[in-house]
Image (cartoon, rainbow, N blue to C red; front, side, top):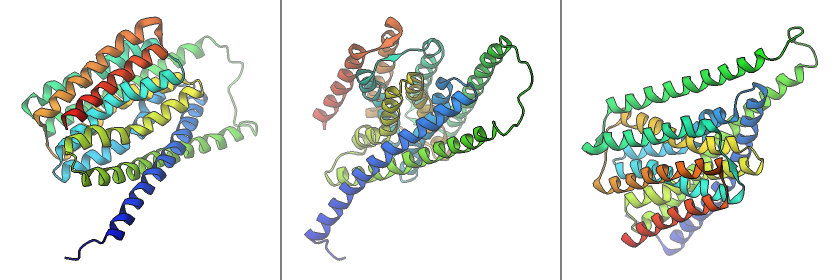
Length: 335
């Protein structure tokens, strides 16, 4: 077996750093394009941006976690699978939401408090109950997927109901015809769909390059699989949510920002762990259970912050960031 020379090692390190930076650039571009396409479609179909964030955008930004979790489980690294999802959920609500609120205040929709938060908290608590036996098996994965499908159907029906009520208040003189004036709208629709597809692809490949290179760097440092999952993979795969949320906040589309983060957490548990456990049973180590307490705690703390003035501002964002930094500190000193 040929020994790796110092120059070859240095070249590999430089290539990993290049992939790290290039992946970040692709992530930023993908987040901007995805928000633009999703927002335009929501406006065109009179669908709430919150619903779009909870479905299309959430699933698009969660695709890196799904790919990494499945690969980790198949390669016999369950700590990376669970750590990636739990760490991403903590990162989404503490780091991403905290930074976004500090960057630009986020107004809270009432449905986020009455529907989305209970769903995020409920799915996280259900996960905790099911993994008390230290594994997540196929039948539990099927349960997760069924719950997720029911939730998506409920969101769509709720959105259509609101749309129908609004249309009932508007008198329509005559049906809309496919006139030349409407032709550009169809072209714009195709363009928006391409934006969403391109944005999801950018987020997917950007995250894969970023996380892949970061994983190589930290494995060489002898970091455990749990810490890689909780810290490296979680932060890396949460970058799409971070970029998308900040871009949405800067565009003053705060419904999409909070909806995307809530939806991503719901998708992370129900979709990623659901699909992964259907493919292969996931073993859960005792150390991961402690991280799960943090996930439940952050989600619980978020409720009073959302209810207070129905707005997440710099103060609330700073509280969330403080929680995340303390959690990170507690992990690093234990390594």
